[in-house]
Length: 444
Ligand code: ADP
Image (cartoon, rainbow, N blue to C red; front, top):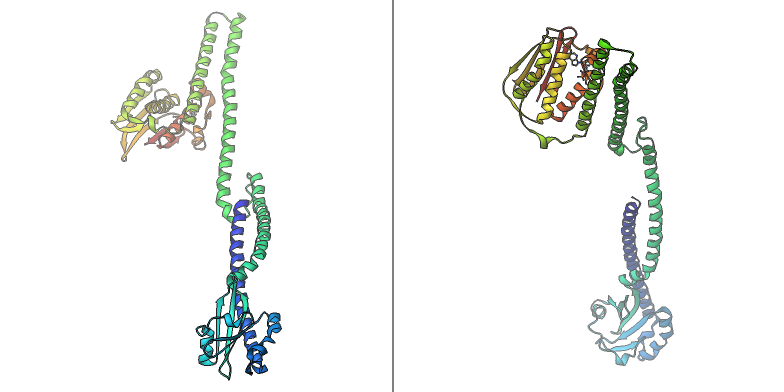
């Protein structure tokens, strides 16, 4: 972040420095050019008025100008009307070529005065010329050197570099300070992410903070539910274990004999079975918890055929309690995990028998309903009170603990069902009335 801010600041500063330097150089150049021109005009006018260049022996007269020229960095050239150089303060006039074709001379001969600027022999400098036609037909030309645009820029370069260096350092400092100031509220927020009353200082961060908070809450909730589950498992397993160890102790001490000993052995077996069922369900649930993408294991499953299988499996249990078990519907195929479908149906049908009255009825439906594959179990059992209808899907939740226990329930059956329904993207609807019965419908 610091690097980025620094680079941005540097980019802007470099552009600003360059633009400013260019503008200042141009203005400076234009100014010095116009200054030079004004000075040349004034000097030419002065020389003209001095009458020095009116005599017949101009060269000797002009020689007297020399010290003045050197002092002012001024060059004076005097030419005849045909372009022959009569005198030059910086060179030997006899060695100089004809100057008639120079723009400023041509202009002076034509209109009385002329001006021109040309690159000097020295790099980065320009010479400004001003020529004035005199009354006797000769031409006076004065010239001086100024810095060219490039020259002016080159002269300013060390200063520009120095400023750029200072600004780079300032940018680095600003980037560091800015980063710290921008991040301080974010750090503070990160330390108190759980505190919902803390709003981010920047409204742009609101969605991000909300997403992090939701995730944070989910993690906490998951940790809490794992903790609760572990505590519940321990408790649930301890109860049958205590019973087993109690009965076994009594048998071991020879305190019970005959008929009662057989009864106790039966209790031990029943509790061991309960533990077994519980461990199986716990393992199943943790497997389902880990299963994320089951699509690979999905195959076409006939709901009706699966229901038939479950009916056959549970028929003896129903018969024992004189509960009438019926299956309706017709063959319908869904993409699903076949083992899970068996498990879902078994759990629901078993509950319908388990929480039924002797001589009651369980009606199972597997087939199309309202254009959807549906599996449905309706019983004439004890029903579930309204306030518990959501909670029966929680792990280890039972409306009637002793009844669940007596009938070999683990309190995990509906939790497994809910999990399977979710993994199949199906929906579950429950209708239940105490004393009348329960109707659970799964729509695929
Ligand atoms: P369990 O192993 O105790 O049956 P479940 O998770 O299958 O556990 O069910 C949780 C609780 O929901 C049961 O203990 C029972 O009180 C209630 N329940 C489930 N199915 C029915 C039903 N068909 N009729 C009445 N109560 C039911």
